[in-house]
Length: 127
Length: 183
Image 1 (tube, chains in turn orange, brown):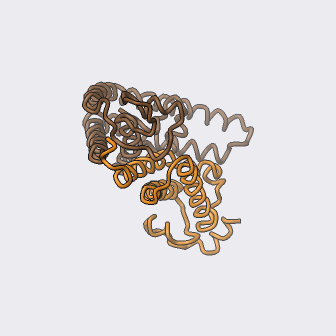
Image 2: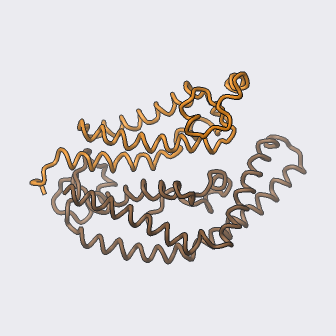
Image 3: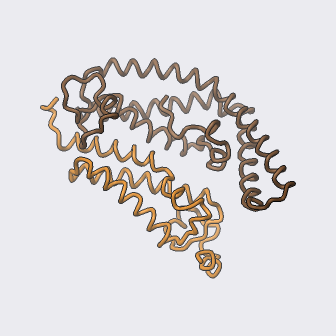
């Protein structure tokens, strides 16, 4: 179905940089690698931003971890399915897209969360 | 405590660049590696396309062709890992020495506080060489591993040294480069 949509406005953003296309709804992605790269870097940015937020709030415990996984997966799912309308089968199923860059983003999130939390909410007296 | 955590992030950024720099000198810039890499990527993409086009067909001729290409790709992948391996060993040794040096510097020091209670099989890492039984205390090694996991792979990707997805997918588990290298 999505391929049909694409063929109607098939010329959408063709030839533009993948970063410009990333912010255009239903953009065309002739190179799969480019789209997966966009997902990868989006994930990394999201890991750091969420880590910052969780650290500033501060969010603690298992809830913080679960919430990160949920938000991370949900944002990517919505972006792929509702914003870009990608046919996930072309990429080997939603699972392949969902796990793209997940571990790296998770590590980035943990580092940011731990460091901001330590710096802002733990006094040096506890050393 | 905060200065320690920031120092660890800085250390892991430096070691990641150092590691990539050394690998570039020893591996990435060599002609043999570049040739093999291009070849593996080309073959992986070709094979993937062929499999997509004839994946379900029972045509013997196509199957044979695919098998032959898979075999060739496997051989190239093996050569590529061999080219990498020698220098990886050298770099691995150097980094193990560096890591044990940092380990002794930060020995027994709480470098950060975890905002969560780590599960039991992580505690051995997150509380390594730390006194007391407050498991939200974070050891050097845990933070360093996390930093390396995120920073090293991102640097590899930024510099274009990460293996392409098609190559890792077609290479299979045996020859695919692991997603995160700690050393």
